[in-house]
Image (cartoon, rainbow, N blue to C red; front, side):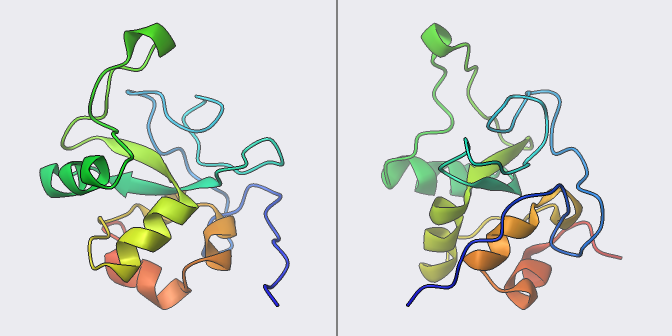
Length: 129
């Protein structure tokens, strides 16, 4: 039986206030720069990734094209070196296949802990001291 999701509030995986992920490009389910999770955010866009060419190519190959602009939706496409709030399910898949990108842990919502353990997240974090 799956554990219940506890996804509300604006804390990161470390239990601290959630920091913005990216304001340029404007990311997050609500395009407010934050990876916050609410009931409306069904895809749980909770994890703030650092986009690399390898990850963007992997994501495109697996059906989640983040790099191709879609002007009809006001989406410029994610570019190498940018931060982006990624779907928790997509991130968990990338972890399982060994294709997970680095992350900004202070900007990653605690809801991702329902899919990925804290030690794995810490091992991928580029903003831990």
